[in-house]
Length: 372
Ligand code: PLP
Image (cartoon, rainbow, N blue to C red; front, side):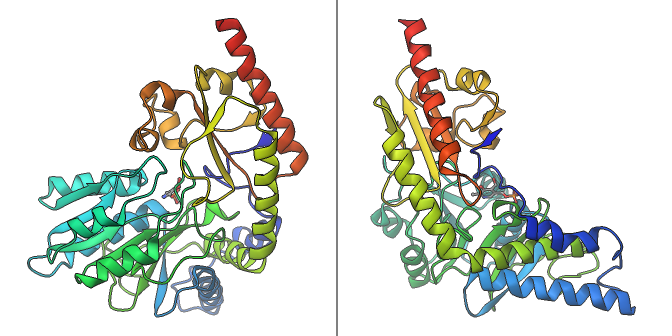
């Protein structure tokens, strides 16, 4: 199989699997229990926390582990609303956010929160003047992702955070697709990340919180994460996340150069008739989302079973609904259904990428020959 779906998830790094192994096999102690074995597990969790904090790279805050980035985003949004000072009852977010943000905002709107959803241009980026117009003293939080999971575009997060702070609002950044791939800019007060997008295990995420901006808990119980998040942590998952974060920090330049080389190859290998969805410049280059007139993307995926690539996002793929992100950049339903997404990175080779692209190009042309 040629795996080109790095935005859905990434292959687990060998170093990560090796680091997790003792914690998955013999070291089963509860990291919250006072025994010597518990203390050893707690120490391993703290090393992992430090590794994730270093990979996030922001100063003045700390990380709490969660069960996923989806949980981290739910917590950031709902817990910030829970802590809102009187008169701060507005949330601003963007039409191209992940469902973990959009659906949570929709739920909060049902609870009486005033939610504004900013549009994006054809390039997938927000217009900062739109944000300026919406910001007022009632805004509690502005939630904008760093790298889009479907079209890879990079929002101007530092500037967005600065504008939010000018009216006393907080800024939440979904950096799930950014961690380890692009620097996380200074500015956000809350940052959600996930291990499985950086060659770590599934089932663990984290919320980085600036000191003083910690949301109220949404999961109640033993208060294991500084009283803010309850539930017994899995040392194996924390250690895996830590090892993946450490590797991402150490390999940052190498991974970046590799992705840039692959992008260059992809752009060269792309035959005529394809259009890139979203900005090519303000983009993480390990994401290519392209469309072709008249292409039946679902059929293409079914025809090329040994190449893993995607329609829009993994979440939208199963639903049969055209991607909300592609709709937000102005594509028709038809154009959205003619779009495919490739994600590549650390373990993708140039040969497999070029091979996959030429087969995809040939299969797409064959569809059109049959249709003609
Ligand atoms: N945000 C973005 C941008 C994502 O791509 C994803 C995963 O697809 C998530 C949030 C949710 O992350 P998790 O799988 O850890 O819940």
